[in-house]
Length: 326
Ligand SMILES: Nc1nc2c(ncn2[C@@H]2O[C@H](COP(=O)(O)OP(=O)(O)O)[C@@H](O)[C@H]2O)c(=O)[nH]1
Ligand SMILES: [Mg+2]
Image 1: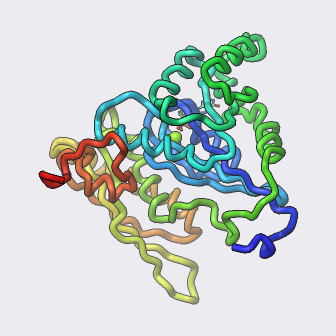
Image 2: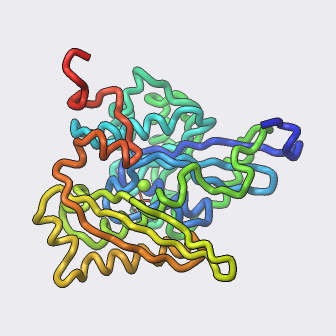
């Protein structure tokens, strides 16, 4: 792409959004972009793939990279989630490291550093974003200057900190302005109005999984994955766009299948109704959603399924699928 194809005043910045699970990364991205792209639930580890969410302010393009929260686990799925988070740092001009104000602050930083294995990887310019300010009274009275100085001892590239809330919008304009000020002159990556590097098929599966995460209890959500098998548009020029989607909800055990289906199919029906609404809001036309539940034992260890879910193997992945002698 030639720079001369674009407006001479164009600026662009790639911002990686990182932190522990459930600190509010996806909520902040949705607030900043003004879209409901990234899935948000009350459960940790909702986001499983890194992806771009793009918005522009005047001539400045901001590409936010949502990432799964890094957390300790030796399970194959979690190794791959952590790998997605690490890859989210590649090529970023700036990192926003979110720290949840409603939890203990410094342990969150130390955990993050340990899990990211910063010996191997140095963090580029980083801003510390203290999130969920609405959750505590008198956030401004907290000794955040001191906390920030301690953080700078471990993250030497930490440049500044900000206090935000995605719930009441505290400092969101300031954050947007600061990010835009930081952008350098350069071509926009997304020119045709696209708002992500992932396609509608990806977001359809995310929205189905989001509703399953919200509606299912206990540990079941973590053993659920969604694969979209078919996503096709009916091209009738006279009518609005209409989409037909077939998707499988994968579960680990037959007993979970019964729960996801629910009594007389009530649970899967509810998951379908709710996710269809979100998919329709994305496509702008009616959606026919055909959902089924498949038992796929230990899908979270199965290389083929994990690849289908957009989670390639991590550096420290188990090598179970390799042929002997390789
Ligand atoms: N009160 C409050 N809750 C928030 C805020 N941001 C996120 N949450 C909640 O925290 C939970 C996790 O949010 P999410 O964005 O999915 O976190 P992520 O795992 O870091 O992406 C959800 O229940 C959100 O509604 C905030 O600014 N204030
Ligand atoms: Mg998330």
